[in-house]
Image 1 (tube, rainbow, N blue to C red):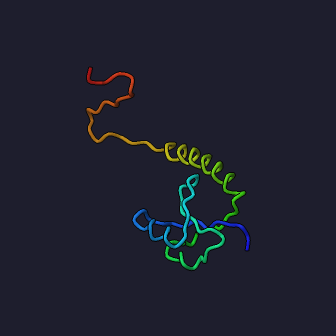
Image 2 (cartoon, rainbow, N blue to C red):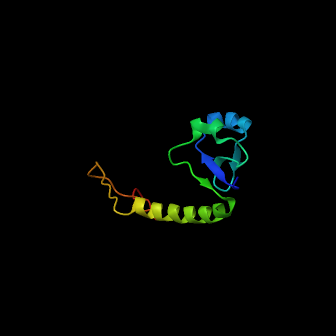
Image 3 (cartoon, rainbow, N blue to C red):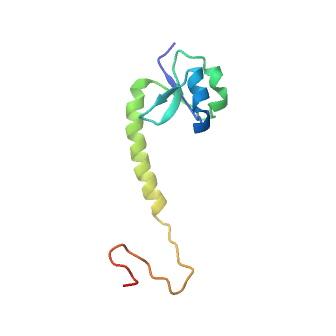
Length: 101
């Protein structure tokens, strides 16, 4: 049996149930996973269609790439989004000096 982890989508309210069945917490990725030596069918209700089994060697490279994705996702989320005030007398606060002074 290969040495892999299968990550789960466990809601916080069900964490104790998953832990009792043998799931482990991956603090680096902040996700619950099934160790390779456990029966994956016990955790079917927390598996998603995108549940992935990864080897521990790829976990460290995966966590580094997810940090890059968060940065690029943050850039994507803020670029191209323009909001306008509904109040015609609205003065934007830039953070340097308050518009009401």
